Amino acid sequence: MPESNRSQAYLSDKGDIIPNPKGSARGVKYVADGTSYYILPGVPSEMKAMMEETILPEIKSTVKESINVTTLRTTGMMESALYDVLQEVLTGSKVRVGFLPGFTGVDIRLSSTDRDEVMELASAIYEKIGRTIYAEDWETLEAAVGRGLREKGLTVAVAESCTGGLLGDRFTNVPGSSDYFLGAVVSYSNEAKMKLLGVQNDTLMEHGAVSEETASEMAQGVRQILQADIGISITGISGPDGGTPEKPVGLTFIAIDYSGDVNVKRLMFLRDRRFNKELAAQTALNLVRLTMG
Amino acid sequence: MPESNRSQAYLSDKGDIIPNPKGSARGVKYVADGTSYYILPGVPSEMKAMMEETILPEIKSTVKESINVTTLRTTGMMESALYDVLQEVLTGSKVRVGFLPGFTGVDIRLSSTDRDEVMELASAIYEKIGRTIYAEDWETLEAAVGRGLREKGLTVAVAESCTGGLLGDRFTNVPGSSDYFLGAVVSYSNEAKMKLLGVQNDTLMEHGAVSEETASEMAQGVRQILQADIGISITGISGPDGGTPEKPVGLTFIAIDYSGDVNVKRLMFLRDRRFNKELAAQTALNLVRLTMG
Image (cartoon, rainbow over all chains, first blue to last red; front, side, top):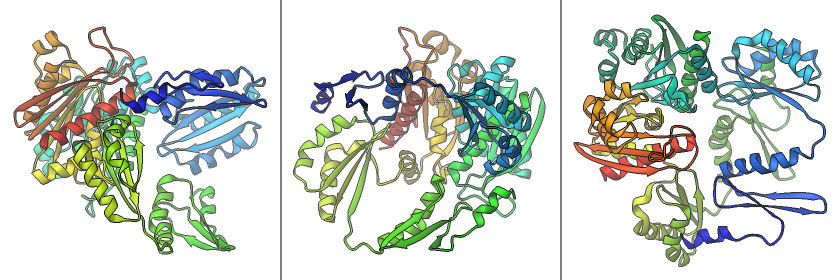
């Protein structure tokens, strides 16, 4: 053990030690003049675990009035458009509403001391924009999609090009995803598209790697090879280079093959390379959600 | 255009407008009593672009003394161990040194008004821990590895299991990576390992999917199928479930096949699912860097 680690074993002679389930640096709770001070390490995952396991339950036990919070997570609609569609139902309610725009979606947080009011407003929002809501509270899109696949007993296989593995990465962030996620092929080169997915040379020559036809063959190819119920593919130009006047940076095709029924979407993403990758993966996940219904 | 977007077109009647190259909400610069106030939108990518294009150059032009900053980026060694190894060379120098530990590595930032002093200390640090330094300043590990592959004219192919596509995702975050990154196979199921990578059924039956032997066959398989110079594979148990006494959660094998020369590493990652994935991808990228020399 290096000498610099030893100092982490020193304990304060005042206050109470807060255990750290994720690391070696512990915290201290100290009360002075009726105010509680919680001193925690700066590593985010450690701080978070200590908050959840020790501090929040302790604070919660001292609070009398409870606030009901429900978060409706949406994707596929801009904050401003959501706001315009929902303005009417929001105006009539006393529930406090927060729009929390992220890069790939907007969370709508409803909070009130009156639980019925929150439920009523949530129902009204579902009626207006139900299809854009993929989950409630902290569930991620990949977890919601995984839950849907599991409930329906479906399996999925992925073929991705411009996203480079990000879509597979997202599917597999969910514990137990091996039950429905069979695998992915990241076909970054034309050779990989032909050898691993069975995309036809003629298709690539005639329509190009970024085309409706190639996306379609990629989705069908990976579904057949891995014998999945759903095949989903992404091919696009992430940038900053590689664009042409006919096929500019950001042009992306996403295809889904659901038991032989193929559907292709043409999209334009206008951000930088990393963001275009994230938008494409998000859109593909959402397409799986909407397709399985 | 929704009504809520129109308000973004209003301009302040005081101060100067700061252009926003990434979005529609502009900023304002306002000077009062000799203090400059810069008001910016909260979207991180927009704020960053406005800082870089307009505000930092403006502030820089008013500064007289320049500070020389060099950041040495390391991976594969704990902060405390780095500190112990470097203590001697750091003690003798007047350069200001900051250790910035991230989740997958530690950046060592050297700053001084004396450029020669910074260069001298950097050289001394390289002598002590040269192999753990993968890049300087803001270059990422995937960019440094990509630069190395490009300089040596090498190509790489990836076979990943527990990381689910994250290693391919990282390789392809670098613009122009299609020059050396040929593709990846995410073989989440045994069937995918056999069909797409040619892993032997006997190997899977005898040693299991998470084993030195399977990792080795995955790296060799993907290198041969995609005709790459380097094949790199990852197979492991990300958790939280799927562990056994002999093969606990976190056990990971990373294999590299460099032109037929195969090397396998056995690792234990002790964090949660997401962090285990990130550590495995980081370790694999670093192994490519160290192997090509």
